[in-house]
Amino acid sequence: MQASPEFAKQMAGYGLTTAEILYRMPDHPALLQSYIWQDYDLFPEFPALKGFLEFWTRTLDGPLFKVTVGHCKLIKPIDWKALGGEFRLQ
Image 1 (cartoon, rainbow, N blue to C red):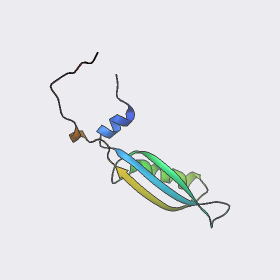
Image 2: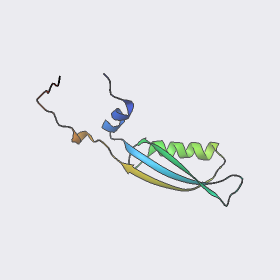
Image 3: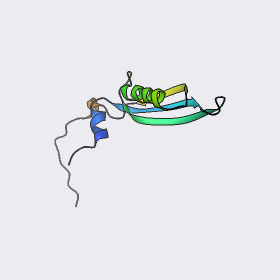
């Protein structure tokens, strides 16, 4: 059995990152719309988030107004300890 890609990223130091992106509506610039982006990313450089925001500014019409970022490392390599036992339940 192989670990999921998300678990492998967490073991490599990635943490769950959530960004609230406020952008102006293309047809109504006085109105703001909210978009929530979530993925595993590296703190503090945030390469995945920066790549998404570059894609946004290059491709989409709604100009960015504000980006709020939250980050939490869910599993760190130091959280794991080797155990010398096995439990079987029938």
